[in-house]
Image (cartoon, rainbow, N blue to C red; front, top):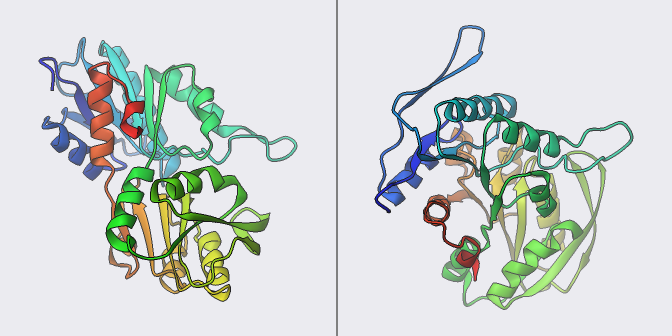
Length: 315
């Protein structure tokens, strides 16, 4: 790194990822005390001098989303008041991203509200991975870098299934751009699941656009939460003649009974990144595994600190 190295500070949502990023950059973790008072108020104390420093705060706003978001906001405020030169909020998983528009009358756009909070708390820029909707970058009035997990996925797919007849599948129409990017890197065909969602967390497969008969199908999505969409899609693909179905999703939210649903589904494997720290259930699941984004985030942090291009990572 440069003579004036950046500072890496971890909140509590995903310390292993922050430590892996620091190890990639060969930097020590910045000392900070982030704890709760007895009434669960968040207290933050930066335990070393960061005046004039370039600080990167690593915190996913995953479950418990509100607690982790508040930790991030208080930490940003502490760094701003400690005279850090620049503070970058590194948010591998940006919670509230699915509330990016008014879904009905008298409903909020919470993704915009959270963007306002992060900016007002003291962030000078944001670094994240695979936003649920690209337009969320425009919700911030500060520079925002949205990284992509597609290169990680394509490398893993090539290593494991390179010689097989692959079909990349988008589990819904909204994810076609994401799936197409993976298909293009693999020079593979693309299929689309046409589904109807009756209410949040419940989906019904309606039709498969594309011929998947005799293919190893690979579903590509950004978030797996309840797992219903992927499991329904996997069943439909098998019924349509697919030889096997795997899934690659950037953010493994896996709430409620999602892990049990995935392990009992036709999915051969579900691959997520460590943007969200794996629970005990995820770690022991027979068909769920994680790829690390530490090197991806670490390289982006290096380039931001050295004022170099981040987008060239994906050329």
